[in-house]
Image 1 (tube, rainbow, N blue to C red):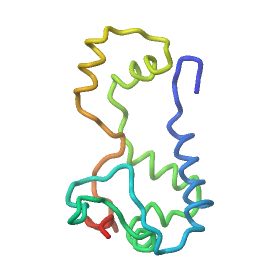
Image 2: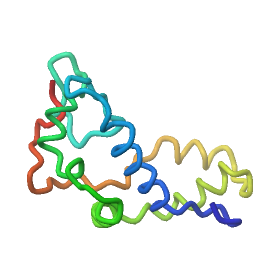
Image 3: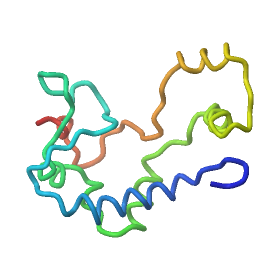
Image 4: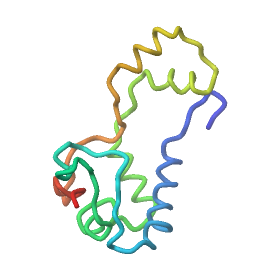
Length: 132
């Protein structure tokens, strides 16, 4: 993180690549994965849970097939939109370098939650790829 509170998102992508290749790769195919994000409620099971078996995900999620870090970083760069402008202020508030009125914070909390990852379908990804 820079002195102005800027966080390089590609550092996190490199960490994700490392986690996928070094830690997740060692797990068995029958390991159940519960994602932190998903694209659509249709990916949930009858019980409302979004999950998938790692072996199924390895076969259906294109990003899990990427072998080297540079290609993974580039794929993520293409898949991630610029964050909303308000994120810069939120980061500064979280770092304690910007003060805003409580009313403004409450307004932001009630606002739209925007994940940076685009929810577009990529070639090879199936709509129900996270179902059990």
